[in-house]
Image (cartoon, rainbow, N blue to C red; front, side):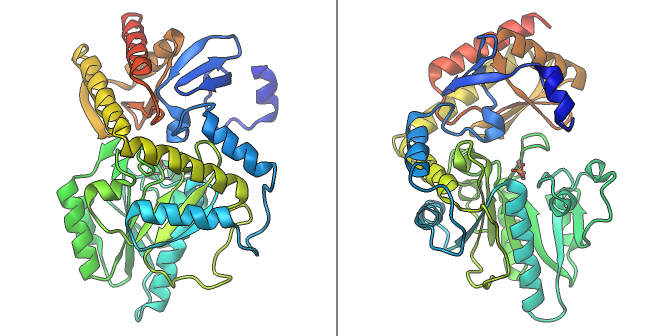
Length: 391
Ligand SMILES: *Cc1c(COP(=O)(O)O)cnc(C)c1O
């Protein structure tokens, strides 16, 4: 089966030798019938777990009526979804719908470019991002990604991206052409690294005073991943542009860019064939209802603390291997003493029946479904403990 796969699919990923056939919340079953605890959730996508009954019913009900018409008509679930997102965020913004994180970030970059074009002289177009960031795989999102190692082969790139080594360096890089700063509040792919809250707040104030847009890439941190609806809520800042994707559709592709520049786009400025269709918005609406309820009931906050403690206890049992515990909410990482050991841990974990991820060079990453239960958390860490014994 795997041989056949490689004959037809381009090898852009180094894939693990498993294929899953079924799931139930934080459990996954592979084609051999083996069961796994899923601490990865499809890289923060399966926010309400696998096989969620409410989500699958909402999707089935919708697609049995309508799956797609174009954005030349009023798609009611899209309007509802935008309303929910705006209300949950607490920001006076409007939304544009696409299909992925990279597409959402492309929208953010277009908003910045148009803002810089229409907002006086000289024309402004430069966007400052961080060196250790990740913003997606399209040519422009890749250029916005500050990791030079990812820029091999694909140039020439669009101009106007400037990389800051850290948040402290951003102000010194601003010039008369700077229109926006784009950051992740917790750098996901970069190593589950949260930015300092006080520094982010100071940055937000400074940018506002200089009429430079603050754009927050919440593709991974958004949709309750850090415990609040948005990490921006947790950091208590008011960004000008926010992007969302991963956890929003519970597995159905969807991306959103939202902005407080309510009049930035006119008809024809931007678009997306599939963006915001009946399927993806029905899914997102149900996901948001499910997650809002577990946030309101206190269940999410309880699980978040429980998971954090489980990671900490696990790390403390292996002080020679795990050097640091990083992250926020249900987005957590352990810095491993070396990259080779990290690879071994991920493989041993898989053999014991628990799915974990890598981030950056040396971070063991946990992104469980937000609906995970205490017993699945306990079982997952028991299995991880066994895996450590097999290294
Ligand atoms: C995953 C991710 C992206 C890219 O999203 P895609 O849906 O793969 O295009 C962009 N930004 C951040 C912060 C991400 O974690």
